Image (tube, rainbow over the protein chains, first blue to last red):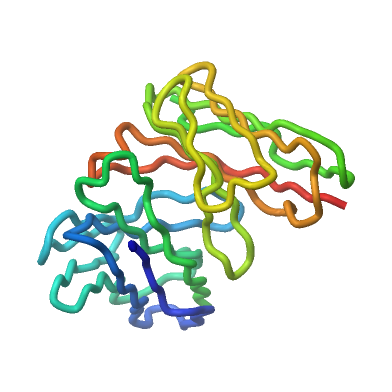
Amino acid sequence: GNSVTQMEGPVTLSEEAFLTINCTYTATGYPSLFWYVQYPGEGLQLLLKATKADDKGSNKGFEATYRKETTSFHLEKGSVQVSDSAVYFCALSPRNSGNTPLVFGKGTRLSVIA
Amino acid sequence: NAGVTQTPKFRVLKTGQSMTLLCAQDMNHEYMYWYRQDPGMGLRLIHYSVGEGTTAKGEVPDGYNVSRLKKQNFLLGLESAAPSQTSVYFCASSFLAGASTDTQYFGPGTRLTVL
């Protein structure tokens, strides 16, 4: 079946630190991969995505590279800010899935302190 | 565009009471979803719809019913609320779930407490 595994949080970093949130997946075929972010008190919003192997998604200083050989899609940011404090969800969409919705990981809470 | 809106934002119920959560989207999306979010559990899909007049079960459908009478609205009903249904409920929509690059757009959530 399809599944997503994320590193467990919470993750606490000082401002300007380097961030990595690990995400690995299990899927039939080659899915599309996503990172969603949930800021406090809000719904989820798309942060970035990649649709094929070796693609790099990027947005707001965040990056993630689709690694087929390691079935991973780790989220990185070189210098985090307090405003990046949120919950981050990795997700996949099975290719040729018909009507199958997204599969989400359990989320990783990030807290950035000044 | 308002995007995805949810009504109400907060609600407190007593065990056994019923209620309906309303989700509305103005993006002409075909697909709509209801999730619940619980601490340590991430997002779990309750029901979804692939178009007007259709519904399908997700991962945790028991105790919930849904209806999609109009394309822009997706209703989630609790017929007899239980404390285990205390959660934050999110609605989402997307243009085509079958397109592997598709983006889901989420509403702001409804926080439900069942006493």
